[in-house]
Amino acid sequence: MILLVCMLILPSAAHVPEINAGNVVEVPDPLKSYAWYGILEGETAADYYLLEMEAGQELRLSISSPDEGVLPYLAVSGPGIEAGDQVPEYIRVPEGSQVTVLAPVVGLDPAYEPFTPMSTYPVSTYSAVIPRAGSYYAVVYGDQGRYILATGYLEEFSALEWILVPVQVVSIRMWQGQSPALVMAPVILTVLAGLTWLYLKERERAPGRIRYPVWTGSLAGFLYIGTGILMLLQTALALSVSGPDGAATVTVILAVLPVVLGAGAVRVAAGMGENITLRARIWMLVIGGLGLVTWAGLLAGPLLAIGAGIFPQRKKV
Image 1 (cartoon, rainbow, N blue to C red):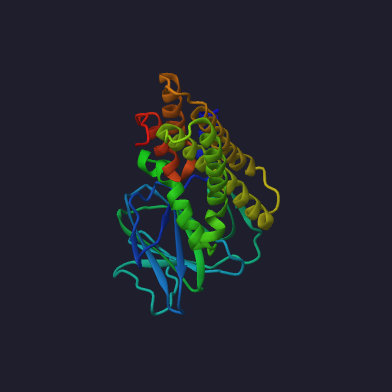
Image 2 (tube, rainbow, N blue to C red):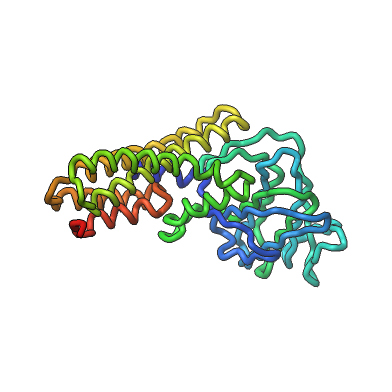
């Protein structure tokens, strides 16, 4: 099941998410698929993206926005650009380089993106084979508001990038303008309800004792379930803008998997007796590892599940 989901995700729009934290961004790999989340503030605002290209490589760029009516321009400059378009005076063009400008396309319908999930309005796209090696710049300017610049086309993730996706997605929600309360409420409410249930259960079954694997394993499960519910709510919000989309099937699978794993973690942890068996510990380690793969539990959940499989059982003094 996990392998099937990974096969579905990777070709679907799996950009490595990055928040633009500065005016000039050096893109690590111009061929690797990145999604850069930026905000233009001010009439002369412009964000620059530097891409070091080799001759014969394809430079592929696209701009979209989560907000209807935000329509920035995209200027591409470099030693192999032959067009001679004009740009505003505040846009810097490297000496000896020409520039081509892509005007925004108005009136396109929003598209559903299953990876985040989010609905965005397409603005413009650019693709060209680079005839000369050198430094190329993609410049986003001309309209204030939030935008997403996608660079590259190779859908690749390092192990660390894959594991950190849930943390990046939380940052993207804040960039999108959602309040922290809206983003984290499903997770917090699920954890509070789950811990209340666990406290009442443990008070009857093991009064005066704190069984660390039971609590850490159950907390991991509640975090898993909460993130699954969060993704389902975000999917509903995105589809309310774009309308029904078959790609949402991928997102739903991604949301259901953490819920299933979380329920399994709670069942294994809550079922631990006086002596925690090796089998239960192994199950928690497996659930923790799968949580990292499926982005469950906001990274803390998998670490807690792994801890539940390792921590010794202690008595309260």
